[in-house]
Image (cartoon, rainbow, N blue to C red; front, side, top):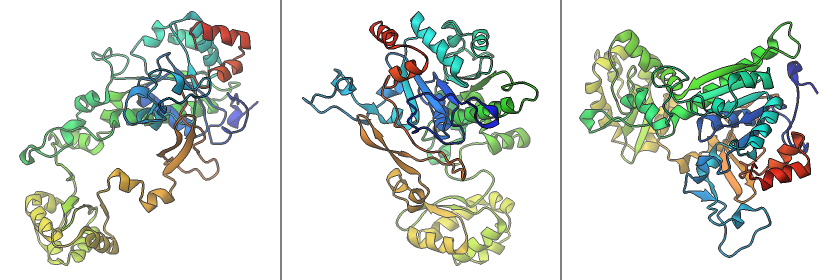
Length: 442
């Protein structure tokens, strides 16, 4: 079968149609990655319709144990159907961390230390369009799959290799952990309250190095696939390629204006808490009953901001008449604004600022986020039915495609949930599958 731009459509699965649709329908992704960066990348591809096969070692992705919280815990004394993991001694349920980034995938439990397991992987790679892995540098080659063999197995395979620091350079052999990367890449030096306020370097509240790596990895994969489809004069598209991305490089690339402040301005940026290094007022303020965020991003907004505060004279004060002047006199401006904001409740200020066209918002916790009408209106809370956890709520899909919409179609798989289905698709018979199971390969 042929897909868009002549791409081969080679769907894995039962043919029920539940995975049909989406701009990447028919694209087969072999996902050898674990933890967060790789699984987030492949979840994005799965959301867009790709057929993602998550290959896990016998013990499973490590994040299955990263809890609590856990969902789908077994009830004491209850017996479950044959094959249900809740019958297994010590089964603790499915960790929320694992559930967060593994929807829209099928699960294959596979022991790659076993020769028969490596043969299964070779068959899978021969039928895949994309391989995503995050082994330590050289780890996949040590399993018997160096670049040369991958090329021989499938010349069209696009291989995304995720590492901590990249495949070469003095730190290439180190493992990559988000927290350490945030420190090494300078992100923590920019995050947190300044020393004068009793602060210290602080990590971002989510694993931003992992997530940015996964997102940029997905961008690179899609670019490689588009280039492959557009390659002229080559039947079936161009040859595959290897893409290297590291947590370090992705995080350094996200330093953006702060990096430019140093590289161009020559001054090492410090921590400003919730203040902005290049714009003010662009920060949080305490009110009579809470705290709000305010972002004055232009001179027109500054004048409207002063009108909303009923302090029009501030707009023409020479100390504050331009953004550059306000930055130079930040220490004089902020105490004035703190006093003003302290005189009314958050809801009153948010209403006034909204009426004036000045960006502002409440400081929501996650309970408030997932009750926010705009979040719900945009489909950013989704539910999926999980075989042991029942109804699971997950964040929705942020991109909305008008003609080929992304969708949440599958719950995150149980360990090895689809092993037999996938092996049958790869051409294994029932007797062969049973032998693989008896040998502990699947």
